[in-house]
Image (cartoon, rainbow, N blue to C red):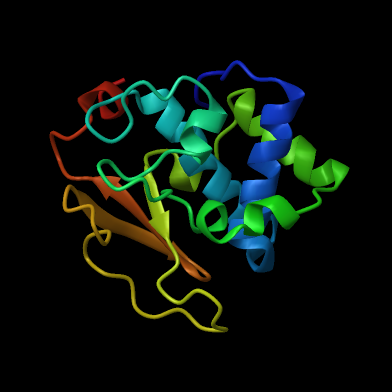
Length: 159
């Protein structure tokens, strides 16, 4: 369980669309893992990466500091805006915002797909590209999931 994140129905829809755009081919588990990471970022509230992410939309539309480039590929390539979540997708997002987290990803703050558009996944790297304060944790289908190195983001890891 994580903390409940204050939200509106628009937040629920945005999170569901991101989960679909990122992990639609990875089933409910993949979408749940992706959604858990996004919710964890709001909960973490630590510098420099996740400070002042006050709601789920802040996390979805966050940019890489100093670049203006969105963290999430579906925001960058527009796939976020073409998704049509079902009631089941919306409920999955709602549950995450109510504090339910996938136990496997409860400590993950990063993920990425090293082979977007491919039917296979390239090997996961030991650290997340452009995020040296990370270490590989696990892979699920097309995505690699990462945790922070010891001492980074103690606000999240020491709760």
